[in-house]
Image (cartoon, rainbow, N blue to C red):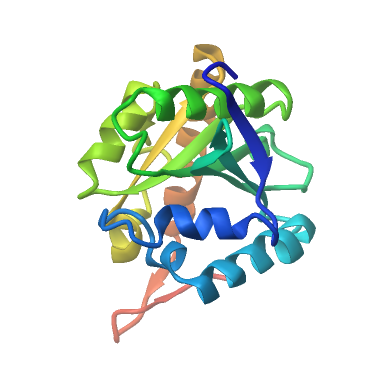
Length: 212
């Protein structure tokens, strides 16, 4: 990339650069596990030992360097190795940048580069990002990159899950045609589920029995 930006996979050796970047960072949206030597080591263990062999939740992390200085980290995860519906060609992304580059425009260019890589090299159809609803800065950042809030056709179950409903899910589609096709499938899935749910038999205690 321009501006002497390089991407290097996160490893046990360079984890110290990762820790140094965030250890003293008081930004409330930087995860606490990125500020502690033990938790950073455990995170790298997960990233290098577990995620590469996960059939449904594979992933890769890269440290972002400007010249020789670490300025951030990128995550691409929830790669699904199963074959089947075309909507499985997707993954989630995450990111965190050091104080020195926040607001500089560099994070936008870096994440855009990641998106282009995932769409072209990995043939993804859409990308997903999850953000706490209170994190207005990150939501604005993602919307500036073209992400849109997930449609009701896909998020129809989240009202029953408080942990999920406190998180905003945004999607970025490879093209408008892809977006229309995927959202049409989500709409059909919702319709099929509601038709099935209507067959459930309510019990006296308020629970439901699913017909065999």
